[in-house]
Image 1 (cartoon, rainbow, N blue to C red):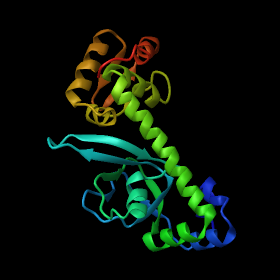
Image 2 (image 1 turned 45 degrees about the vertical axis):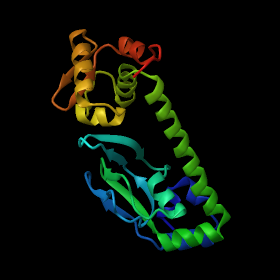
Image 3 (image 1 turned 90 degrees about the horizontal axis):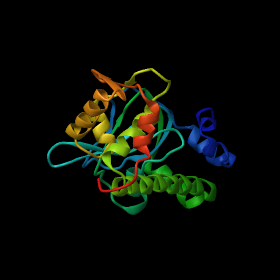
Image 4 (image 1 turned 180 degrees about the vertical axis):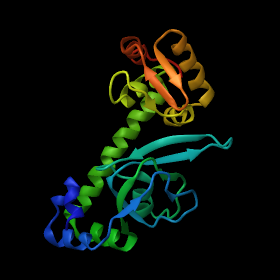
Length: 223
């Protein structure tokens, strides 16, 4: 039952449920591994133990938009809906953004546990509710915050330590914000001229945290 104990929610399940889950073997995936893409059938319920998986949608022009990320303790809406709602194909794409370790519960096992285990069902629904709350917060930001405010807020969250570069491309930032790379590029260029940030190849470094925080807290308005 070793890997089951790594997930706080699953560790509280009854022993019979944990025994069934422990028979599954975790997978180790490198950064950039594709889990699924549009049109693929939903195979099972993914439990991320370490790492991160980004789920994106592609526009008609080919631009990708990040709709959510899955880290330990979070669920994948695409998989959950596909398993519970009868929609057997994915409409988005999922890819690891760092070395990731996860367990995939086959559809049959997932369905059986949902039908027979109140505790497992509660774990799934709680994770799904948490994910939906995050999605609602994201939609609220898209609707009411300017791109400038969202970009500033995102950079502040990505910064791991002061005066250290944030390793992310402008295209990745644009996908995370649901906007075009050109919009991000223009804003970063303006901030760089004002001494708020410093940009490099695939990096952004915050130089003036207070002014960037002010931009993140700017009055909400049209995107």
